[in-house]
Length: 462
Figure 1 (cartoon, rainbow, N blue to C red):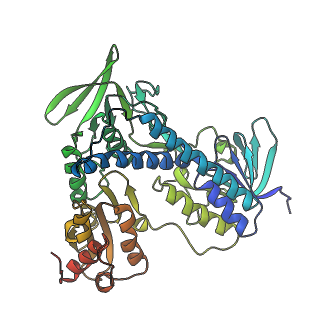
Figure 2 (figure 1 turned 90 degrees about the horizontal axis):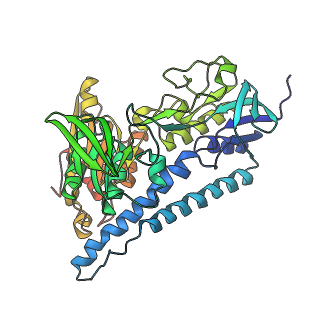
């Protein structure tokens, strides 16, 4: 039997890679993680964490209007975005150090350097030695997707990475891409006084989300002065001194926007090039690595997780896949491939939007007979009391089985509230169970209870 230095070698210390290594160590495997940058990956360093720090600061700024309504004199003339930027970097750095601590605590070796796969049991570290392992896990993440005619230079045309590293915001910006990243940046920049133009090629913002929920968000954005262009694409841009002239083509004809910077957020690409997959004879499909139910590739002993496999590019998906892969390696199969209908999605703008499962459109396309139950946020007294009445909770219920097949929440704290309905679905509970469970009053979660009561035909508050 071959002898290896480690049981598991992980290439990439993002939210998938480091979680997989720690879970493997908990199950008795000797693991090492190779990372060329800071531990925590894109999510922790230039993604989820710093963006959420900025979103928090944006909300702090927006509370100035509420203070004015109470008669306070609020002077935002000296508002300094660089301070918000500094706080976001501090949060990222703190949590990156936390990952290092967790790896050390679980006796996982962190190897700094660029790794190159040399075979199913070998990773060579640039400028260092070659490591060997019984199992190999590819967790190299993704990068911003470019768009022809809009090359990233992180000056005029920013990627999400570049936008998160801005210490000073432009006065006017054109955001190309109305997905989760685009609307979050629109929210942040608008809160700090930037004139925002948000462009989406498809017919609605957040194209994968429920149209009724998205309409609530779109109305709120428009009320705040965010300019939204759906069914519109950017054909190119030109420079006129410090001004960028962006050409748009849409249903109502052409338009030219004059802005200072362009933020391009039209998706992400898997980092599967230049990591040595060819040494494994491993073929990708559209850049993604095909995997089985336990994240195993076609090469025995080699696994892949996160943004390099064809599942939703979400940090919590990568982490869960890391756990599944590690448990399979340790001989503990039992939690197979993630159920796509059980993966929560979350957009952290204001109002927040969260969902799982089918949208109405997807349910119809699948031929599912369903009922929808909708409760407006204002039916929960707390939403009115705290000045956050805009929003709704929608539950989709299979007509025959009465099972919850999808849920969509838009409004304050939606990204927290969605989990009650997701837990209900995961536990195979029915709307009746949610409707009859006592919810504390007053809470926003009462809107969830009331939506379940709508599904059962006995709403009290609407």
